[in-house]
Image (cartoon, rainbow, N blue to C red; front, side):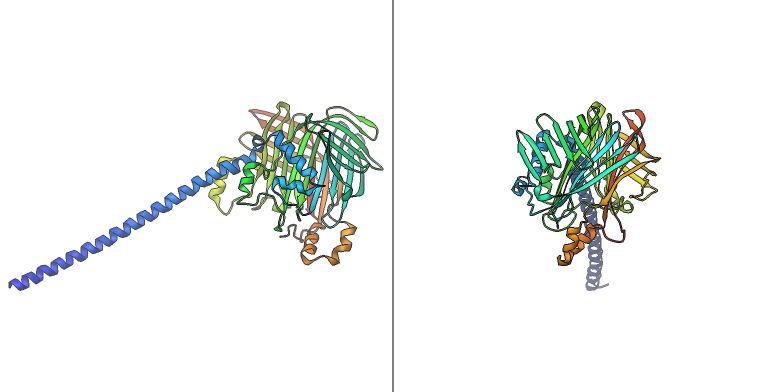
Length: 463
């Protein structure tokens, strides 16, 4: 073989070796890139989980124990701002809310005495008129009879003021309420044709399950809407401020009421088209327990994505609050989030009924609340349901007469509202509570009220 041929062969051999090395180099590079990509994805997933967990622990986990973030001073300031803002909307600036007009407002009470359960529902009917209804109704357990009266008043005549360190809500001679935060006292006086009620009360708890005005959630509000809107119109927001306690003295139609009955009060305000959508609310309030469970939306929608389920659970016997807040929307489209949520906050609420809300005898349902701290089971008792009050909450003649002159959006809005009914029951129920390793079973009164559509083919929400 000539030297030139040998050199050519060597060059060809060298060329093959370089090609092989180049191919191997590309494969190694691709493998390195793929490994880096998988590593980047893994780190990103871990980072997302860590950030979500931090966010959950700071903002979402406390939503079940809001009582730990509240103080009496904070509640006092918020309640005074909300109540006084009815007559002076500039007050709302203190809580960073602009209220062009009040679209929803009520004062709601119930009183549980040995003989009676009595209610006051004092509600503005809708944003289109100034009619405020004073609905007063009671159920006499000794006679199994109910007494109901509804009086239309004028919202413009409602006065909210502060005198001698007392917050006052009054409307003519029909409604007079005082709240004394300093001494934890309240009084209410109601005067209608059929029913006269006067109560002096000791307040023992102001806890709310609404987070939106707490400083921590005001910060979150810079990025998300925390104002519980029911429409997407500007400035749609609401506030709900309750307190509970014991009756000190009282009279119903001149009959003296025994001391130490239980009462519930809350004041709800909605601004700029806000209204209260369908819900079902169940509460047991006795000497030992407050068990408040609520489901928003209609019964068939109660467990759908987007459903909110507020709750307040207190062992009154030991003055211990266990839970105050709400379960937020389910994340069934992202199962891993549901798993994280449940791991951090193992709470479940269920509500099942074999009768529709609004039935005359709503006496076939079961409710549960299960958590790491307490398990509660509530079962209705057959033939122990008393429907005391039912009416069209938002509808009135004045608004019907304005309907043809409304713009298209307002007509759609009122079509939703006028279809909603309000109903109130007092039922007897069996309650089982597993708490701190002990199980107690007792029979209790349960107050139920709900809003639900008369015609289920009409939407209950308008955006």
